[in-house]
Image (cartoon, rainbow over all chains, first blue to last red; front, side, top):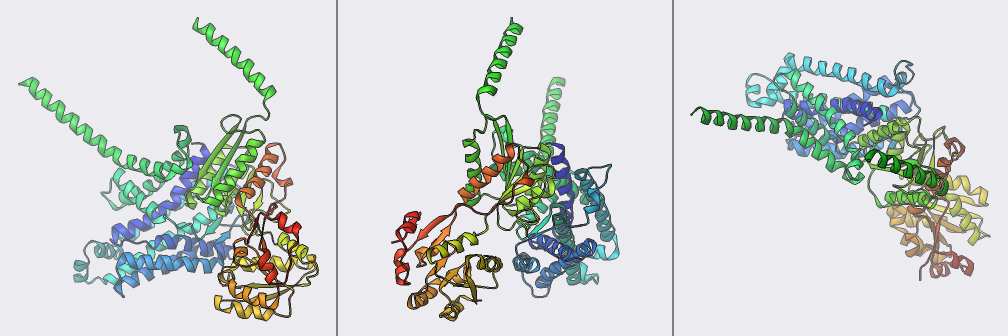
Length: 308
Length: 323
């Protein structure tokens, strides 16, 4: 892995950490399996790219992308809580609808941002740090900021009500929490984060494309579950940090897998290698603990035998 | 003993490699290729590039390092591949299809990049204009070669003055093709008359509106129109107005002729660009190319039904003659 690949993996990892945090909110906090993500990621990218190309300030464009994502999340939640459509199906409906909507927004399948001023343009001309290092630093700081916001929110009164809604909706209702409203709010926040990630990713890689949402939910889930397996989830902060870590790890694994040719692997094997490496990364600590425990028992019994 | 042996081996190796540099053709080169997804057309492009390089004396594993990566459909992976290549610093990065090309241009700012199978390189902001490649980026577009199509129509029917086009204004691809038809029409002495068909059901009405106004009809690769092209053929056979198509499949369905292309040839054309850069030319001196090599499909019987006799010369040039 060369330094470009390493910093690139960090950069992409930090951007997708926002998706991981979003998935953390929907799947873990609200217990709402949300596939809207595959549509709201390119939605954020499409809104931001189209507005920037149309001459809007990149900052305004990114904010609008978040709002669009929030709207998409609210629609999914509304379909679920008001129209009583199963959560999975509701999110799939929004996701497929967003495909057409994204095509409308971009007036085509692709909107290029190469050579256009974006939020990241100021980073291109820092003399002290080359752009490929400046990007991941900026995204790292930004992700840390968003993470702090999410933690602060989840510990606020509304945040606590939201956590109660996910943990035990009946109990929450009994305590006067409007659970429908909480689901809508949570889904709006979650998808706003996803759209934000999409908007930032489009600006970092030079274009928004209608296909860029494919598999984003899988990546988000893998990051959350991978992070949970590797780090402690005992406090909210640790849990959220684990999600960010999982996302960066996932990108590092891909960067490693891209060097598969040294082991006689081919480009077509990439997804398989990624899957195997992620599995290994997740299982390794447990395996280590188990073998250690086994060794200990064996050793203990041996010492016992020796004592006898 | 062993030291002496290894010195001897090193000595031999030096001699052999020195001999190799004298006799074998080009020096070691490194070509990295990024492709958004596995797809027959895109794979054919890649094969075309590789074949041209191997004909020029660069063979993988010998004097060519060939690093092929596919993003398997994931844009984020395409971006990571581009960054890996930026760090590996190959002699040329070949980027196949728009998303991979955009990722390469965004990330590998100091590498030579040759894109391929990109329909609209200017719209995708890969280059400023076709004749204005940027300092490190050029390539080959797979845009339908409208100019060649119109030239061919004019060759078959030198007396034609006005050309009718039928398309759906809701299809972005068709709109950009029609723009090109209108741009190139006058240079071939053709007046362009448009007939729009927003739905397949409107195709016949659109065709009728052209009767008496045009000498020949051209159908761009428009999904709406092509799906209902039999309706157009019926009308034009009665009115004796020849119909030419933009895609070769339509020739089997009754159009007079079409100039198609295949992606392997697009790849070969890309390979030539890569070769030129490996030989030391800068991308900024190589204009972006459109499709140069086409394949002619003709349907002489359909032509006769529309009152047009295709001469033997044209039929002999055809890759396929539909009976």
